[in-house]
Image 1 (spheres, one colour):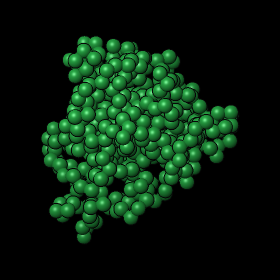
Image 2 (cartoon, one colour):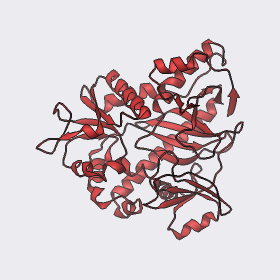
Image 3 (tube, helix red, strand yellow):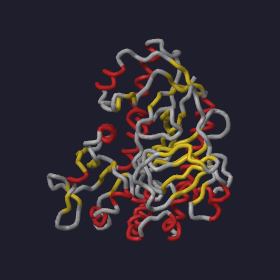
Image 4 (cartoon, one colour):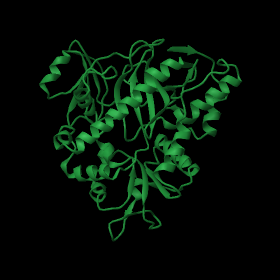
Length: 385
């Protein structure tokens, strides 16, 4: 694994804007950054990232199965009891998942270590699936990078194939917060992949979803919503008045309700408990577990529910090295072994390994001068040399 400096395309900004990549720059600072790329060997990709991603995905499904048959697991994850039936019924029906992103610490030396799983509303999808592939092709054409390199990236094709498995010739509603530029790009991109899979689509602000007289969800044309993709966290959805109507309605949701189990940092100690000393896991414990003392006075403190690095603290020798503010933490915290991210040219990269259905299929890299990855951390492309 290397970080290789390279020239940027002189027209990258207009290329991004023409592709609908509206948030390539945030508050005047680069979000997309192609002044360098990360290079991997094929063995690093296949054996050290792709393979572990598939294995941990299978472990996560085993954890969900355990949770569906053991209410104590749902309690430990602080999932409200009123939601349990929605989750167990969704799992029992076999409601399909579309995608997810595992975040790893990886340097090319030693096994990749799981930091967390973005299971419900993972971001950076468009830039991973589309825009970094465009960069790869154009950078080769313009001799910015060597010819005949490759990229671990079949996300686009896998999404189209997965939509065909989820629904054939059906109608899909896509809902979320369209006034958020990043969410809008993700929703529009997924709508495009669904259309390429043969589905008819309707986009809809989540606050505009209605309920008819029979308790079914409907759109603005009073059309019943049979299948819906939502870019909106389940833990938010199930806690407001909308959530009380989910169980009675016949709508199938993507991501499905059972993903609540996996979009929770409580899975980190549970995975460690189920698969102790697994080479791709870090020791982790619930903060109120006496066993958390095994980590000593150096660890990462994470809220059970958190997004974009909010409320995460890096503790070393009992002192907070870094911490991010935010609104999370009311449900409790987990402690995970402190495994510093590698540094390349003063940057801390996090490896995002994408899974669509049950297949690992792509890579995204976010880097920052700060060891906590947040919503302003830059996206940097990659290549296989």
